[in-house]
Length: 493
Ligand SMILES: *Cc1c(COP(=O)(O)O)cnc(C)c1O
Image 1: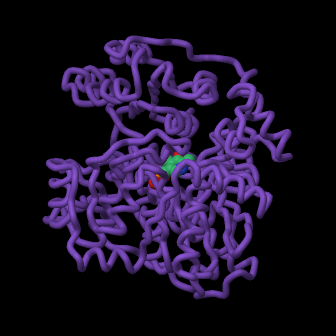
Image 2: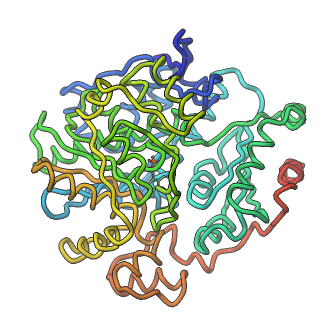
């Protein structure tokens, strides 16, 4: 299986290892597989009886054909071990009305980013060997909270990789800061900056694009790599859990082989829902894909009108991982629907004017699979309350946006097929907002929120967040935004 850029009409081909090492194509496009491999009924039948790591290795093997079965199985066993995904990698919980919550947050940082970031570093480490790379990869991350921690947990103690994470000193939650300050691993360094998230991100981009810094690193035996969510190595592992959910619905008698399920995904960068669409293209019986947005409903508008327009206000919400105006992975959907030439033109228009409009026949093709629905802050809070009342289920703010969208879709369409809703974060990761949504008052303070939520709902705090206030603090450096490169040099020694 070879890969190409979404914007390249000449379709130059790359291997999976090259694509994982490089991340982004040199024309600014995203890497996509040259064709979509198929998943047959017989293969799904075989996966029904397999555990999650085996299912994952099988699906990944269809895309990463330059990795051996043994390599993929070893990496999947290590990534999705019971000891790090306590309670299973992607268990389904039945709610009312044929809705199932697919819990993607049982990993080491209690958020769905773990599903990709636990395996991707292992794939990168092997990609360095496969491509004959002799240097060590240095990964720089600017984070507003969740991605940094998930990346740190994924890359810690992985061979031939070092990682530096920068976060705005006053721009992350108390829990998020503690999660990063107490990070373990002998190849990672965490540094706060005086500035906001944009300063951190600009600083990282500046380092990446400085010839002088690149040369300095090269002489020391390093090269820059990124843990970005548009890397194919992060997308491919996300296809797996949709296949796994289908197997689980067969096994629990909800579906007969070949019958279709629907999927709702709380969407930000469009990676997670795109993975579901690829599963559908492979032949997994998925009917409708519901794209759920919060108050930043640019995607809802896109699916309804065919126009993507980022010239609009940006809202901070209690589902911050979905607060986004540019959904990078949407470019991959456009490529699958309209081809490289159209995609390059849309992206140019987006760059120049902040907007583009797809042609009616392309919109029609998208309509055949996708629907867009959104929930504002009050609807999200109401959904958290309703879900607790009706199903005794505690949903986080992101999952609640999706549950609301799923309900809206089912009501409008009358479609009663089993609905798998991607649950992307533990409610304890957003304990403060979940608590306030349920009880209408604030908990004592953001750290106490976890214990208070647990006591009131009788649910357990997931292991990565337990006793977070008592862990040993390892990283306390704070530097001016202008000194980020100095901090990297000091760390490398
Ligand atoms: C990243 C994230 C999302 C959005 O996922 P995309 O793949 O970017 O669409 C949703 N919920 C949570 C909790 C996240 O961390």
